[in-house]
Image (cartoon, rainbow, N blue to C red; front, side, top):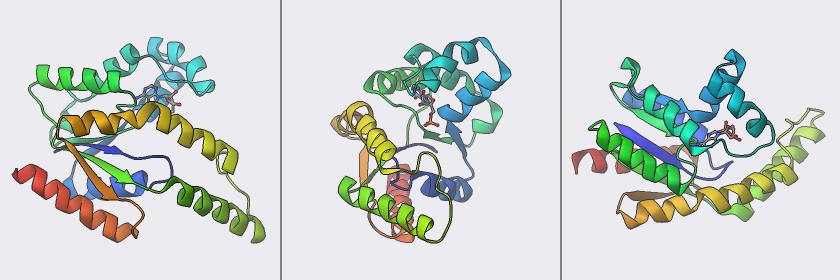
Length: 197
Ligand code: AMP
């Protein structure tokens, strides 16, 4: 099973991806993790990606597509994978279609967690207030301004992906504002429909 999970930061993609991985015995492939590993190992890709990642920009399509192309041929991808953080742009989505086609693979589902961004902002502001009130520390990226920037970047660069997949009839939208278990149940329904289709 090969899946793409779309949705803005804070939509619960990580939690749902973990559940999908456990249930379907597939692996999660995160381009962010792969790039961080390349930077750490000091490979050629890592050297090219380092400064871009530090500035919060997007690493070039050629580099990212190259690492995904190699990675999905590894034996541990045989059962399938869930892509996390890729594709990030329509150009990457087009390239992914092309490379899957070349490898005689196909996508089973593109699942988008649809959320109300205003409600997500309120949720994260509350979480920060509660943590501080309890005397705890908040993560560096857990502040409303950074969160707003990440949401804006998502809307500008990544949201057009949902139109791309909708146009080709592959997009399955799920209400991401429901409880975690309800979202998981909806995802499972979509996945079983897609695989049996
Ligand atoms: P992430 O862990 O997904 O937030 O990714 C961390 C950083 O890696 C991003 O800010 C980008 O610089 C880079 N990156 C990860 N995935 C991609 C991608 N699909 N395209 C371009 N850059 C990416």
